[in-house]
Length: 221
Image 1 (tube, one colour):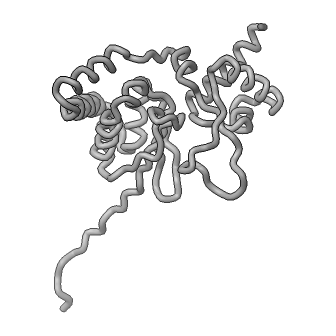
Image 2: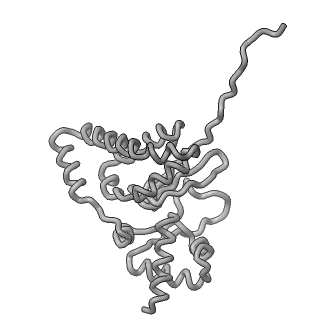
Image 3: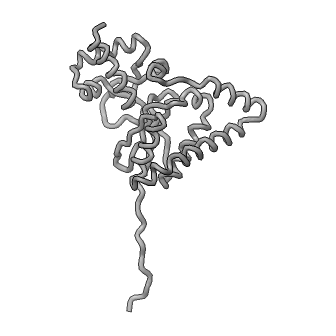
């Protein structure tokens, strides 16, 4: 394989990793590739087990018409992009569950989320835009996060999850992380999709925060 072809193929794969589930058209537009060129690389990446084609998640589909298939990174693909599963963590949490019950896993998940919140504070303190600041912190933690504006709020999209394998076994980790997002952003948030459940991207909806108007008390004279 020529070096430039390998470089392009890696760029296609990384585009999916960093931007989440993507159609062939979207990938081509991002990289300036022809539809035929994109599909050729996609076919080879699927053949190598790096990507897979799926129907888009229902929560992410907008508009009418039959949605185009999206391409997502497989577990094997994530591993190739410096993503390794912590089998020891899974074994340890299974042992804890068997010996003392699942409640201790929930306690650990909250402890982990609290630690993330503590590490995030310096980043959050520098930016008044809490969503952008949270995304910046998560990027430093290896989550490849973006913020997408929506009509009634924003979507926090984590295109990579360093603990996806562990979270698939123990969803308490995702639940504690979601609670942390609510605490940090100061509003109730809703998980729409998770990599741990095979959705290709962790998507969290953050509703717009409406500021309450301060009413001046007093009687009309």
